[in-house]
Length: 601
Image (cartoon, rainbow, N blue to C red; front, side, top):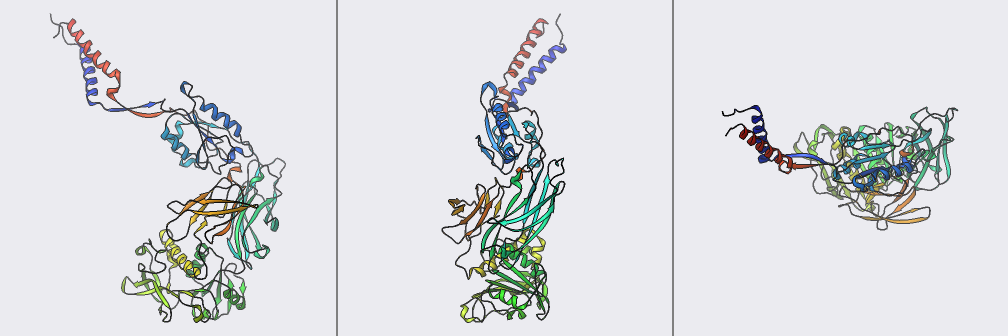
């Protein structure tokens, strides 16, 4: 009697066919390769690890122990992270920031188990990918709590005239546990330069957080013109971390303001023009507004204090650039030997005047790349007669409602100063009102406004100078552990330049290597440095502070964890899994033997 087909035989046939189909299809699968790389330890090398209550020695020992715990006795690798990722060394921490995201991203491309040793105070936790963080083992060595008073920031003008008043806005605060004795209630804000105290005031320290106070002092207290670094500090706090009790602020004091703006009458155009000139001209700017018509009264725009006509005349006479904004006709009575920018905003024909793309001119390179069609129209354009006895160049034109003949709105002129009655060799005239709306809208429109004002200021000021700065510091003061950033401002593509820095009688020469975006960085130890270029007119002061945000107490935002599975994900084809062949052979062989016993064909 012949046997019959059973469920067991059907199961064996199905299993064998399924394994055969998978082998013929050969799909790729993924598996984690734990032995793809030795262990990697990310060691926090920010300044907080060496600050008050820091546990740098324990962190070093933990990192070495984790690195030696690789599989098969293989030693691991240690990377330092902070403001950037570096190779391992046992030098004290020196980075002024704690950024974990770049370190984890670099570790993810390497594979292998990852461990992080830190005090938990991470600056960029929101930028850390959660999947990368979940796979890492985290060892947290928090700092001991302490009470600290600090100067958070100092803001003020970077260029002033000798007769100006310097107004500094100082942000200060406290953090950490308050002393049980109730100390650190009051402190004294001080301003010092070259070892001499210039100003001070008593302030009350907050229980926690940051508050602000103003400090004013006459610029005449600074003994000599030029660039100077002033130290703003907290005295009498008696805290446990003194390295964040003071900050540097650099400013340039000139005998006379290089740029004087006269606004008569003052309006939105003159207000935005004064603000933008202060940002882009890189020289002291002083603004006077005529509060009453017909020369009835002038005021200093900084504090609205009355200023005599004689004082305005004296300041204008010594300025390198005079800006006449509003109705320029009555302002001709102020004679100037410098360059003149006339910005007329009155008595123009109203309408929507759209500025056209520029033609060839000395400012064409500076204005390249602006999307002129996307800019707001000017509100009015005045009649502008081109000078007949000088070389005049039309920079920009505008058309009413984008139709009709274009009318000039910016004109440059230049000639020998001997033929001008009380005028410099270079003059520029702007005949459009309402251009402040470019700056008011922000974004690319605001950058276009800045580009126009900067191009005009550069061209006018360069007429009386032997050269112009090719590079400038982005900020003249940098916290401890952070590089000094420089920006290329010269003509043409950025190129490497040599700069000499002098501090405490010692000089050093470095090369600023600018990238394609015109930015360079230079790392320096704390100190006040005078810099100059051997091949150009660049001069100034930069300060590397002892202060760092890392010195301040901080609550750990990263917590200890064991971490997930480690290793690199590897693609494995089905045909490389040997057991699948065994399953197919075993299923078909078992089915054949079973069928033989039951007498089936």
